[in-house]
Length: 258
Image 1: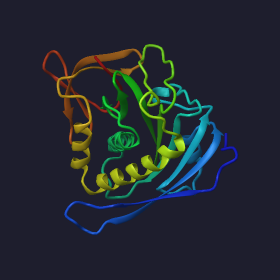
Image 2: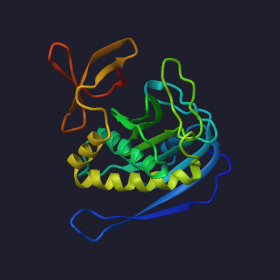
Image 3: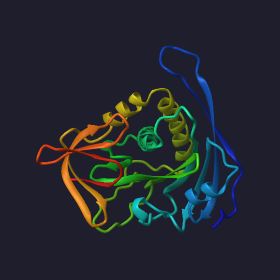
Image 4: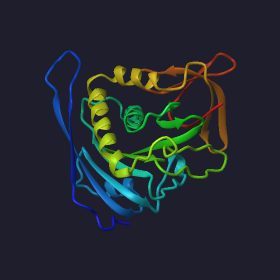
């Protein structure tokens, strides 16, 4: 389903200034808003002319998706948006873009509202207290990766067996106001990732669950492993320490606290 009644492009300008006082690199993000669509991820994947730095934000999605094919509730008032990364030869492993997305997301929410209790859960879910506030779905098509963000700004959907949260009790933030904050944050963290992957991993660790946190890892719908968080590999993969002391390295999975 193609976007319905799209608005004009809006630009969000900001400057990335690396450490050491060097001259910053000018970055530009373009934000396109639509009232309703099936999936912002699917629309950007299909749009071969879309370039890095462009965002598509929908007021409502009819076919929003989460990881492992689950549906993602997309009511009006929440944020539903996607952007594109054009992979370069010198880039870090594309899977580590999950960490970029998580760091960008928590930094944007911290600017939008004075929320306490924010925490990243591997690889890029954002929790507010015990409930999931936001999630990210990354999909690759050739040398492009589309990163889709869903943030519960106004409404916390009812998900069987999963706690959810919304930003609304803390601060009223519209999708239109949140979009440029996230676009700027993502562009900054994308540049950091290209310059220094260990720095990105370090920032993710600072905002995530602590070493020793109990985790249940669902590697498949009918398969799960329990253990404790033992940090990240240099390429961003999860280290899960089992009761036996063995460390299992997780490439991709659905992770639950506890």
